[in-house]
Length: 186
Image (cartoon, rainbow, N blue to C red; front, top):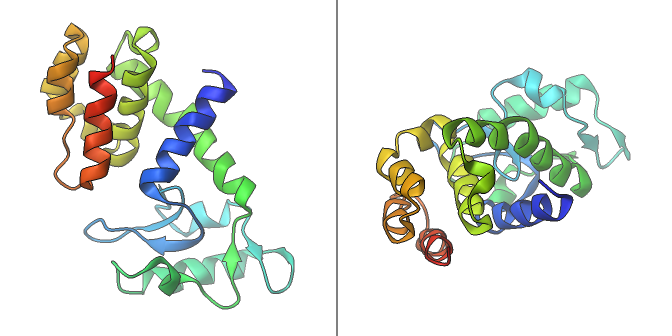
């Protein structure tokens, strides 16, 4: 995948997932600590491994500061406005790191996973690849694997059926409409 294609994928994800340099709780049940463009942090170790900065001190965050921020966010109520999770002092990722984190996850997790689930993934039209990446990011690779009718439609190159099968109940209408439109453009 080219750098330009990766940038387009990140732009699509940012459009639908949003982007936050600080940790927040997502809308899952139960809510998960998340950062960047919808990147779930499964535990404090995952947070400490990232280059968070203490924005007041103007330096890299210490392990204790990052772990403390993770724990404080994890104890908050889910489903709040993003601004409710911004802590003092702000422990944040640089904007470039938010993008780099998404690119790493695409390269290391999602694209290889999609290439396994859809053996002809690289030969699919670019619009179909974009939708499958979006679905995998939104649902997880295991969640996408449950969409058997969608996979069958993609294998048959039945783009109208793929458009119908790409609907996700928990996604916003605009995201579902974009997915369907992209599949239909194939």
